[in-house]
Amino acid sequence: MTADDVTASKELGHEAFGNPRPGGGRVAGEFPAPGTTTWGTFDDEHLVAKATARHDASFWHGREVATCGIAGVAVAAEHRGRGLLRGVLAEALAEHGQAVSTLFPTAPGIYRSLGYEVVGSLDHVDLPTAALASVRAPAGTTVRRATAADLPAVDAAYARWAVTRNGPLTRTAACFSAGGGERLAEVSGVTLAEDDDGVVGYAAWTRGPGYGPAARLDVDDLVTLTPDAARALWRVLGSFASVAGTVRLRTSGDHPARLVLPSSTWAAVERRPYMARVHPSALGSLTAGPDDDVALSLRVAGDPLGVLDGSWALEVRPGGSAVARVTDDDRLPTLTPQGLALAYAGTLPAVDLRAGGHLVGGDERTDAALDRLLRRRAPAVLDYF
Ligand SMILES: CC(C)(COP(=O)(O)OP(=O)(O)OC[C@H]1O[C@@H](n2cnc3c(N)ncnc32)[C@H](O)[C@@H]1OP(=O)(O)O)[C@@H](O)C(=O)NCCC(=O)NCCS
Image (cartoon, rainbow, N blue to C red; front, side, top):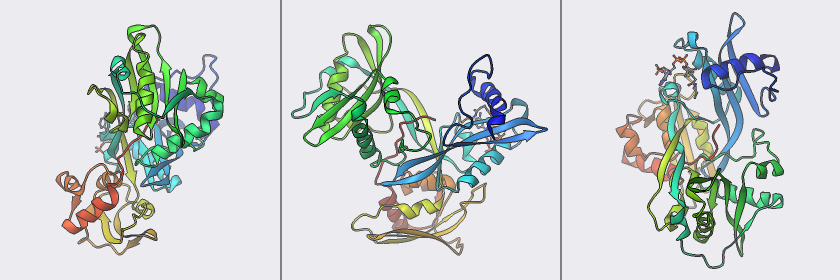
């Protein structure tokens, strides 16, 4: 779709998601937004289905991997149930030719039949602010408010955390275009934790309205690279106890900063599932550990888009990894597309993939190899799109 389709796209976005209607004197943002492509299906020149592909990048297995983020998926009410979704998604994925595609579904069932599976989630948890104030003081880690000059160090701390997980966006693609001043203006403050090595953590927080037990402090990012950084930042957040009863943290999976909390309260108030569809070629960028010397052949079967199916030979050796398509062999351990996504993300071990019907064939040796290669990092994502 082009700039000429902006009104039709926004009308469909209004209908599906309750976004503001176009017009009414509002200035429409750039369309398509920077770093994105929007695909539409037209019926008699009327837009009836759309999907936006974000040309993004995320960290998987210690590497930056090009990622097709799918957003804004909608089919006009009277045209639903005719399979129009498949057409726009297939176009978006084909344009990308990329190894990994991810999305936040409104319902996972919409995307399962297109080879996606829920591999993680973006969570919001509530913590009583007073409990954070009682965290033991760290030795040798200090805090201060970040300025625009500190943003490169903040980004470096984020990247140091993100590269240790499967799934976090790199935040460097064109879809992340906000400049330094703008980024700081989006929050009330960014607090840095520093030790002799420099920035070892930060919290980006926004003060909600009012004060008292019902007031809230929202923490969008809490990155802690050392236990003392976690202690220092929890204590800063805890210092709001007299004016904001709750700290709401945006997080994903198990947060290491939780390990230094004396209180066990970690109340999930919102959970947004994150789905992935993975092309087997993504296995070629696995990071080899010093003792890895693994050759494993796998098969993928059941992709409704017909792209992922086939047999693949994977080699992971100290010098690097490689994957190549080989002659299809139905005696190989066989993953569904969803099973491949769950395995690649490190979400489930082979034994659970079998129990869920996503892995058949192979044996204990191939299961152990899969787990050894793919379960080294936990899935996580901090950015909603
Ligand atoms: C979701 C939406 C795009 C689906 O479009 P559609 O043309 O109805 O899709 P289809 O009928 O081709 O169904 C595709 C799959 O989604 C499933 N599906 C559709 N709506 C669903 C729902 N609400 N919950 C779970 N699964 C659903 C169908 O069962 C089908 O799965 P199957 O292939 O395994 O049978 C459309 O209903 C819509 O625009 N909804 C409002 C906006 C929205 O939720 N967008 C998704 C944003 S992530």
